Amino acid sequence: MSQNKQLNMLGLALRAGQLIHGDEQVEAGVKNNQARVVILASDASEATIQRYQELCQRQNIPLNLTYDRYQISHAVGKARSVVAVTNQGMAKKFLSYEQESEDSYDA
Image (spheres, helix red, strand yellow):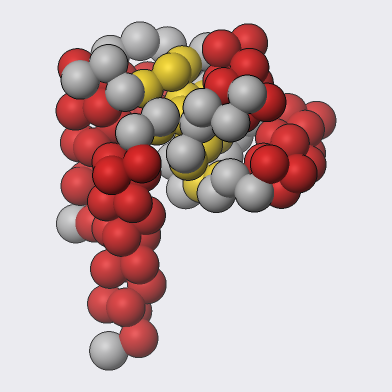
């Protein structure tokens, strides 16, 4: 359930103009501190995953690897393996859904 909320949040962020997508744009967004949370496909190449892990860690930006390329692409309506939410409020909401999911497993 929380995963659906997160994916819906990506579509909402896109429509609101608060989502950057594509490798070059997201990398630039992370480097200039525009990205608030990065969502990278779990089926991306090992080199890409490692690059984003290092980049996000350096900039102290949360990195989410929950979804595969198909799920991300379906959520934003474009073939993408990496997106980033740029709005702080939307990023917090996205991450709160992740916490909700973890809490439901603890019960």
